[in-house]
Image (cartoon, rainbow, N blue to C red; front, side):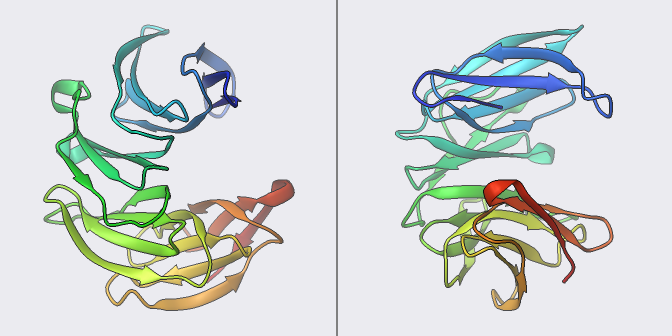
Length: 232
């Protein structure tokens, strides 16, 4: 996913591990910032043109299912809560929007809006594991990470950070949230106490992406193409 700012957004679907391009499409009128699979054959893209587009991949072809005009400014992140047939999107307009995907189709209007952030929302992550009510984390330039139960519209608690976060990822067991920050450090947050339990050295510059590994470590990527492994 990507594109040219103010011109177009393009996504490419590739095979793994061959990394061969299966399909691609220039679709949005501005850069695509995020994409997420709803199921094995359906995914959604969110872009700087403020739109969400749902796609279906079937028989080697990809077709556009629905375009949703829900945000007033750029969409920066999308996340699926598959067991509840829900999608959550957020971005520059500071609002998390919760959408139904019943029967595999993205609704035209959100079920609810969660507007507690005071700045752009740059990343979303669903907590792994079994929970009676799904649990979601959001990171914002307001220097907070917030923890939600989006299916009932409830803000549980939030953690304050000394700098802006850019990317978040849960550990595989859902016990910790790793927050990649603008100062190149990885901060480990306890979701129950919202305390920053560790501040770990990462890279020089911004951390733009965090991914959890099965062994408990985290892979980070950021400024200047830097990549590193961080062990809490």
